[in-house]
Amino acid sequence: MTEPDRRKVREFARHVFGLYTSASLAYMIDIGHRTGLFEAAAAGPATSVELAERAGLDERYVREWLGAMATGGIMAVDGDTFTLPPEHAAALTGGGAKNVAPMAAMVTLLGRNLEKVVDAFRTGGGVPYSAFQPEFTGVMDQLNRRPLDELLIDVWLPLVPGLPERLAAGARVADIGCGTGHALCLLGAAFPHSTFVGYDLSADAIARAEQEAADGGLANVRFAVADVAELAPEEPFDVVFAFDAIHDQVDPAAVLSAVHDALVPGGQFVMVDINAQSAVADNLGNPFAPWIYGLSTLHCMTVSLAEGGAGLGAAWGEQTARRMLAEAGFGEVTVTPAPGQALNAIYATSRP
Image (cartoon, rainbow, N blue to C red; front, side, top):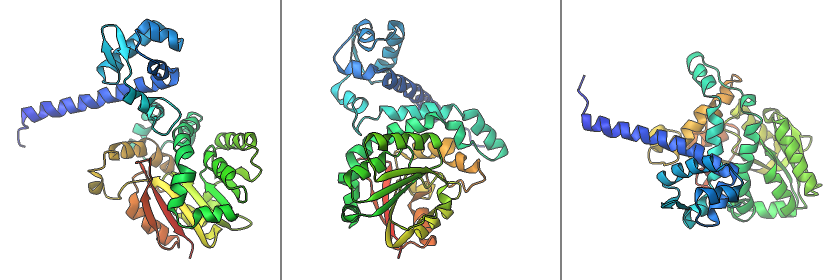
């Protein structure tokens, strides 16, 4: 065995410790988001005492948190005064899609089931979806709501030729794996002549979806708890959407076939899913790839394997997606990187 280069060993060890540091900071960002510390810091420079008063929090905890923020390059410090630069505030505050702070909650959530995932490495199987509930519903809602608000109607829909016009004229539309239903509520409000139904396995998510539709007075939007692998509507749909819902299905092939059969001839299927390639070597230049594979191991793949499923995983990639869509009977597929959301791509196809 070749003796390792000691310099390279030290460099790699520092790299690994940097990963641990980043993981620790992810927890700190989650705390800052949940407690309103970033919003309070964005109001202007402050000492730990002043920031704690603004946020209504315990000063000792705020002081230690500020230490992590300053040494982690998230906030600047001058003596006892801490400042959140405006560029950093733009990425950590506000209700828009540019606020990446809510993503930290996913790191926190996934860590809770680490022991169960380790057991699955040894024995097979996986960690069921129920083990991530009810927190997972709220985390996904926070991650999806902002980009959907800003991008779905005006940016993403026009990328699919004829889709906005079809919805405006009046269409029967489904959203499979709809979660808390925010996408359908946006669509229902924007296209009152169409009717919409959302399906999801989570009763908690569907309850929240029904409440949002009721609060919005959306009589053209309804929801149901259902397994979309058994999708069999009384009347076929003109359009079916799937927002980050296919890759973690127990039987994704059956779901795609069910979607195909549930569409009218010429009906459109729009799938927003992870923007990745199917081969690991082709993802080496993708800065999001480690996150995608990690998320898949800790959630997307394991929830499928827990039910004896395919375990497709988040990094199933464009090549596998195209093959599976073809096997389900769909026609030509176009793939477009999702504007404003680099992690995703928009797949558009139709039933011949």
